[in-house]
Image (cartoon, rainbow, N blue to C red):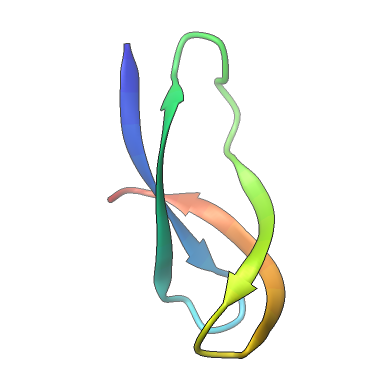
Length: 50
């Protein structure tokens, strides 16, 4: 029941990370603060389709 998701930077819009999550337990969208190598700083990344 795990699905693959991509994490895209909210500033530049590029997909930087890929992750899997349990879609039965976590039904809301994932939003994490991660490092964006294109912006060279920590930014918010939101869940998108891979």
